[in-house]
Image (cartoon, rainbow, N blue to C red; front, top):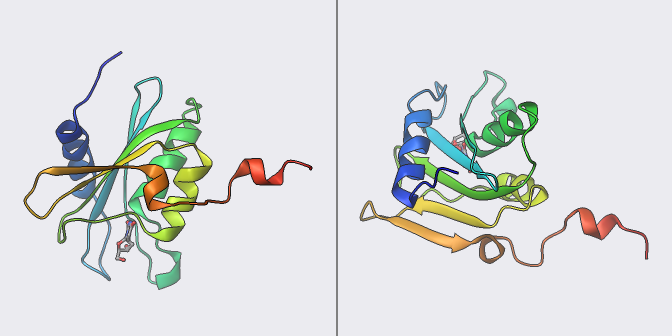
Length: 135
Ligand code: THU
């Protein structure tokens, strides 16, 4: 299994961000999702003239992972905003990443170095599939 460093994951996210479709915000974001079996999926944000239909980079990476029939377990997500560092995942993306058991998040710090946090620090006391299990 190929192992990727935090910097390599951020580089993959940056390459995806270069493809972002952001005519309305001019705020390109890229995400790289590494599964627990070592497969990498990337996504960028894709906006729409109906502004509310914009899709974030992280959610595009996750849906690509699922469409590929991958193990639905995210080990790590790396997120880059080309216009701002750090670029932490938005609330909606945190919830979607939580569904797929994301363990760790990496962003680029103000100094350009990777900053990494356990996922439960960015979404504590979260709601997940286990909450739906019958009592
Ligand atoms: N955006 C993302 O792609 N991911 C996030 O976690 C935060 C926000 C996008 C949505 C929109 O296209 C642009 O950034 C500005 O909000």
